Image 1: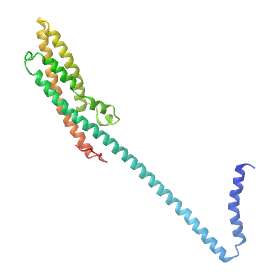
Image 2: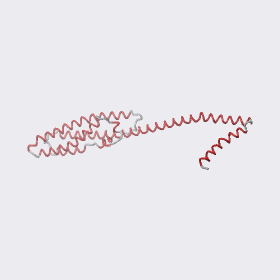
Image 3: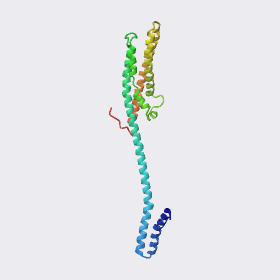
Image 4: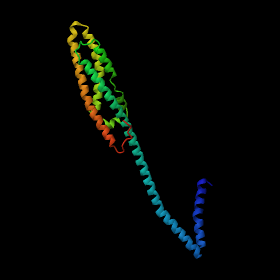
Length: 228
């Protein structure tokens, strides 16, 4: 006999034996009353208990799912807060460097021979690493729509870093020829304008950063913000 057939036999026996025993003892009033009372209790337990147990289980599943979503959101908000905190430090450092660069190139072009060497060093020191980290994160797309002031500033900053190096090389090249002074002046003035533009966009980026940080402080759930 196959295993499945044995299972059918056992199940049938478990069902039929109590029924036969009940029929045999049916005339015994005390046994009949006790059996019916037990049966009635079992029916009530099944009819009422199973739906209640299922409802409790569904409620527990919903609570677990909600807790999981909340924990994931808290983790994402905390990560984003750390990214923005690093960007805040980076913005301040870039602000100081841009102010130095503006001061260096704001002097008369021939006031110091190493003007463009210093300018190139400052340009190389302009930092974009914190923004790169954020841009590579999964939070970037949901937080920074197209045209965001922070994004615009960092794009300008990247271009300015390249422009300062190019301008330094061109200035040296034009300055080595007697007739290249006009072009050297043009490169100098163009770089000054680019620095002013970067400083203006940096101011807007600081405002945008402050708005993002305030939004996170009032987020639901709020992030576990590190100390300032």
